[in-house]
Amino acid sequence: MKYSVSLALASSLFATTGALAQSSNPFSGPTQFFVEGYVDLSYLDASGGQDGTLLRSEVDLGFRPDGDGLGFELGLDGYWLDSSTVDEDNTAIYPAVTLDTAFGQFSAGIPRSVLDRGYTADTVFARSSFLDLQLNTFTDSFLGSAYLTSSETPYGLRYDGEFGATKIGLSYHQIDLGGGETDNYALALRHEFDAISSFYDFAVFGGFEHVTNSTTDATNYTIGAESGADNWTVGLQLTDNELIGDSRIAEVYADYSINNFTISGSVLDVNPGFGPSISYYGVGAEYRFLQNAYVDAGVVDSDAFGFERTYEVSLGWRF
Image (cartoon, rainbow, N blue to C red):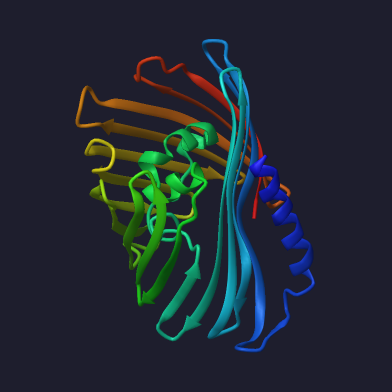
């Protein structure tokens, strides 16, 4: 399976880079090894009697220079889903060489779209990895969801800059899809306001993605806001997706934490521009232990035709 290939690659990289975590970079001096993301295994039980198992990961690892200089990043996204109705697996690998400068970070190779990391909302829908995966065509960039299910490779460039409390990201990729060579341009912004009080923080974000080839010329837009404190977060994200029937998507999410427990709730409404709107909603809870391990449990439902209420329990590790 492609997924097992990605896990083998990750294991190999961990083994070879662990000893080099503090190695010297001839272009920049010392480098620092990093790993971020999660891996989890979920069990699903639908009210109609169907069940299944989902193994999913989103991991970024590599070397960052201690100051300006060259680095390397490798992203590994993948899943394996085995249920009573489907058995499938897909993997997306994002290797990129990075250059950190006083003006920001430049990346080349197969970097992620700026709409998928670092700027917009980064949540798992109601602690349900399964539904979060099903909804990624609405909540992730077109590039990310297309690459995950395609055998083609999106080569590109990316820029990330930070100017005071404002972050800006730009990315360009080219991938060969059904309409031939497809160009993908993306812009993302995020601004962190000074704390409203000694307890509350507030941020706004937005971005767009333009996709063009011989048969398609479409633009997706997203805007949103988040607010929170040490033990709670609430957020709203609005998306206009021209690629999916000019759909309009609205998502509201909230988390509340007490010690090692977090309670989450999410509602997502999709107005596809054709036919009635569809709503998804769910609640979940997480318990964290051993610093990085967690157990999630949640239930999700929808008024979509044929959707069955789904219960999910997962065990995972967050880097």
